Amino acid sequence: MIQTGKWNKLRILRETMSGLFLDGGVVGEILLPGRYIPRGGFPGPQADVFIYRDSEDRLIATTETPKAVAGEFASFDVVDFKPGVGAFLDWGLAKDLLLPLKNMRIPARPGERVVAFVCLDEATDRIVATTKFDRHLDLSSPPYKEGDRVDLLIESETPLGWGAIIDGRHRGLMYQGETGAQPRIGDRVKGFVRSVRPDGKIDLGLDDAGYQRIAPLSEQIIEKLKSAGGSLPHHDKSTPEEIRAAFGCSKKAFKQALGALYSEKRIRITNGGFELIA
Image 1 (cartoon, one colour):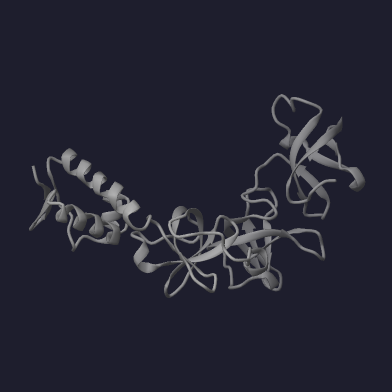
Image 2 (image 1 turned 90 degrees about the vertical axis):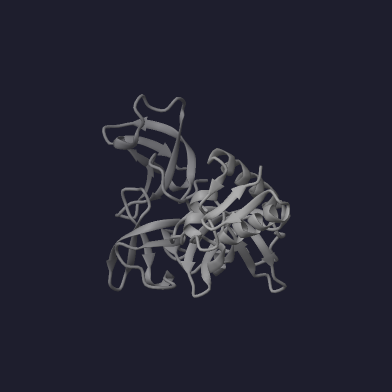
């Protein structure tokens, strides 16, 4: 049985001037328009295609790759808005993805970027987007522990920091001080779990925590010192953006590593930065 909104391997029935007709089982034949047939055709009797509905609500096949399939989160550019209908998102296919008004958590305007979940509308069986995430997240007790490395999709900005989708399943919060350059909505980044609270809320950071972070970072700083001739111009007044650009870490992590090196008498602090002790 075919799955609308996902990739399917369908048997090729016949070729016509319009394209290939594929075996959709109980839903009948599905057209793969000629413009989507790979040069040289398919290597076997089946075609690997994405199934969705066209502007006339017919099931249609394509070999184009959408930014997300049903059941996934992704970031999308808002390309249009129709009052009483909703926003239209560019998801990489000929037909834009509808974000209905009823599915909007906050207004979405052309030119903006939004993070949305792709799903099937239960009433129409059409593929739509939603920014109301709760019913599509795993709300069970998070399986994470402090220091776990995770994939993050930045989905919102809050007064405290940035909300993020974790591994496509959970939601967490990254506080302002945990980043250098400000993330943007839709950015995909690697991060770490800072803590899982008793209520299940997850705190996030872009750097590992504790000694397992400081020790490798300390050695990285020493190597950079050696490459730079023994001194570097970074100090307490350096901006978080400068620190992250130079060392790939937060200013907090940098200061902890620098403090460890100073305590070990491997560096000395100078007026313009710090230098290696020979």
